[in-house]
Length: 169
Image (tube, rainbow, N blue to C red):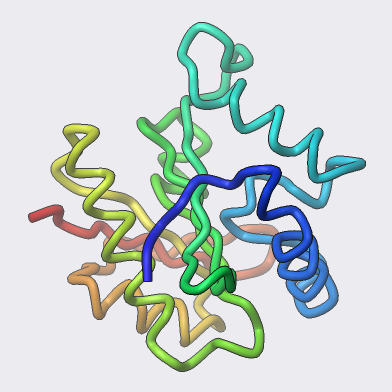
C-alpha cells in the first residue's frame, strides 16, 4: 500500500473509484471536489493549481491529493491541506479522506491516514486537524487509531462535527 499522485494513467480505475463514492455518498471527502469537475482531466489540472502557492486561488490553501493504491487498485483518496485558513480551522481540517465503499472496515483508512501524517510531518506540521461527523463512527475510529484527540464538537448545519487534533510524530 502506498500513496501516489493521481495521473492520467490511472483514469479508468480512478473514475470507477469515484463513481462508487458518488453512488454511496453523493459527495467525496478528500477528493479535492472531484464531483464538481466535468472530467477526470479537468480535475487533474485543478490539482496542479492547488499544489503551487503561486497558482492556488485567493482565499484557498495549498493542498496535495493522493490515492491509496496497491497493485493498480485504488482503495482511497486523501487531500492534505498544507495550512489552515479560517474555514478549514473550524470545519475542514488539514486532512480529508474517503475509502472505497467495498473496502471500508478493513483497516485501509488507518493506513491511509498514517501515511498522510508522514506527509504532514515533511511539510513541517506538528499536529493535524482532522474532522468527521459524529455519526461517522468508522472515521472517528480511524482518527483515534492514529492518536487523534477530540478537541471539540460543533454544529454544522444541524449535524455535529467532531474536531480532532492528531499529533505528528
